[in-house]
Length: 109
Figure 1 (cartoon, rainbow, N blue to C red):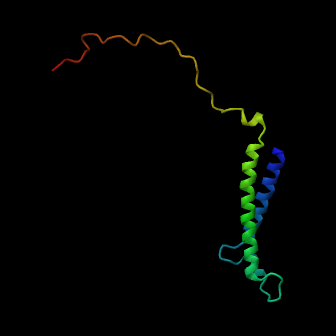
Figure 2 (figure 1 turned 90 degrees about the vertical axis):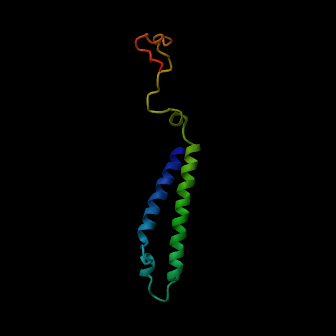
Figure 3 (figure 1 turned 45 degrees about the horizontal axis):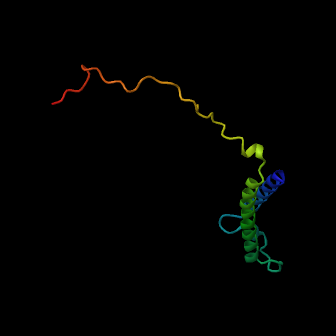
């Protein structure tokens, strides 16, 4: 199931790239090629359609990303961090309750 979700996410990402490349930043894009007056979808409807497809694909990628975390195999999700964990044993240190020698003690003023 995890592999299927990853493949669907990749397909949606490639489609989203294609849809974004069809658009132009100043409102031209695919609608500028339909300049004739007798088309099935008008210029305004073409822009609305491409905008809706963009939002649907973006939402699908988000949904598939969240779903893929739930279906992630245990071997991947429980592998832990790649950073080495610090040592849990306490290394025995010296005696930290020692007093300063009298010569180094601060003088009271």
